[in-house]
Image 1 (tube, rainbow, N blue to C red):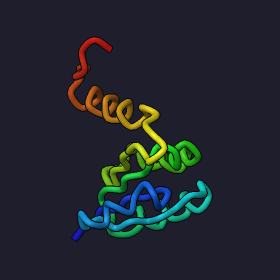
Image 2: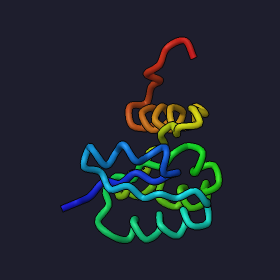
Image 3: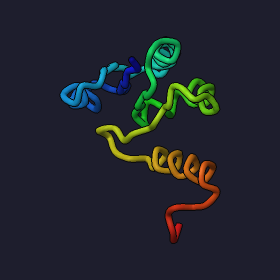
Image 4: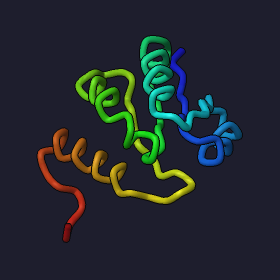
Length: 105
């Protein structure tokens, strides 16, 4: 059975454990790259990564963009939203559907 995880600074992800998701506290991008690679090679189908952590891991995350699994989804952290997660979802939908789903932007 596939698993779902949330990776980022502890303060941003600890609440996800109550939803049954695996939490992977990481504050350093180098450690994040290593853990992401390890999770991608195991049974994780979805890995949420905080936008702040992802900013230092772009190259590692891009390795999985064209693969079916794992889906790596950026989420805002406790420090706020950079908009990168929304842009990524928008681009994915545009690619799949062939059209922009958010009007006025």
